Image (tube, rainbow, N blue to C red; front, side, top):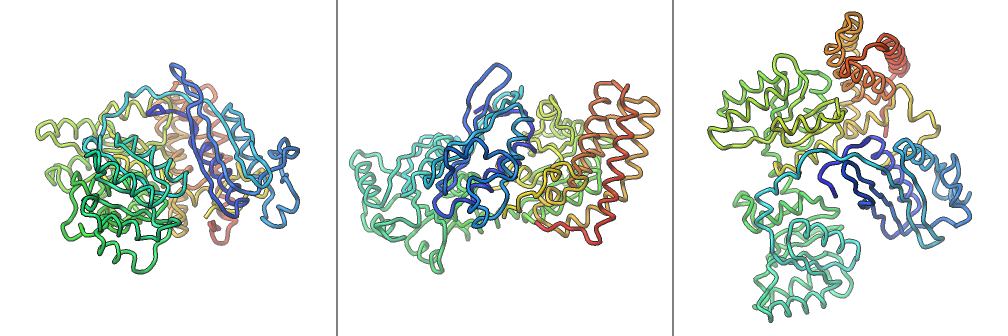
Length: 541
């Protein structure tokens, strides 16, 4: 898979959410798998094939051709038993079409199946980032994966292989013991064993006990992955010398950090070395101090709350020059990460990053910097990375995107009901989408909406003056700021018009700027009316 692709992340996310939600609803037991594969690869574009497969009730062949039509389900009894109208599939089909893709279903009654879609994406122009130095220490380490579930084995196999480890797979305890003994006999013992906590045949700790009783096998480091822990499990793990006890589903970053810690490539407090757990990994992350550089009050509040909920401490700077002063006063120590807005007064994010990198030349240090920008246009990501930034998050900020960007740098060791009408996708105030933006925090959403209303008059004044004076650069900047703010509260129609104005400014083509501004005013008036008509902001998931 290419290291970077360019496409519509909002539409892609919504399609996957809809398809996974549909699969959950019609899969009473078994599993649901989401995967993506490279379908085609050209010089400047790729075709990606996405699949959401399940072991659910399935769809009869004669019904599959109408499954993407509005208010259609394969069987009316499904509506009575499982609820919903099937509109999520219709919306998904529309979104796939907007992405110039295709969508189809492969399914059989009582055997499950899956929904597939394929779409083209542009390729980013950045080079593959260098491999993190801590991962290099894992290359060549043999790992025995023990799990009775074939999907779990495949996922772990792929994950470990990407880190250049050498995984071997076993379906159960007896096979695992055979492989351990064979490896020992060939003088190539497994340094690491990853075992499931719930397997038929042997109970949850029987395999560990058998390994520990054999002096020729006892040197292996054992980590247990479990879908559901029980009281006393952690104490039993400590007794048996299990190095880590992690709960599924497990993030790549969690497993990577745990493995690096047990092999000494990542330091941990000495008192915490007895047993690594998900809670302990999160506790270690709480030691991170993030410097947030952002001039907009709404974006400040949103980012601070999301980071603090994760357990990070946050220091705020309102522009690049203030951030640089804070870092210099601290001797460039005490901060683990910088989240840097790109477009700011005084000193923008690109200038600030260049200044930080210049000062780091004397010490050889490297402070991770993640760009935050509402532009998300072709070339923006490349400009950020070329300036010395390590990552990139597009505004409106998505919770998972932000946390993944932080964790992927190595700095950090329920679905809603289906829409009931097609107009949900373009309503003035989509509180469901806004709630997703803030990680489900209703109180935070109620805080940032008044902040938005307070800032809106000045934002509009800046935009109106830029249009009236024909100042393309000012138009681009004003529209860029407004776009990020309206996106944070789920105002998609206003977001799209602001994006159009920003592109006019960037291309210095203002012929249609005045009518576009009037369109934006109309959308914002609709938005303000929608907010005013809510006696209490309805942000229920």
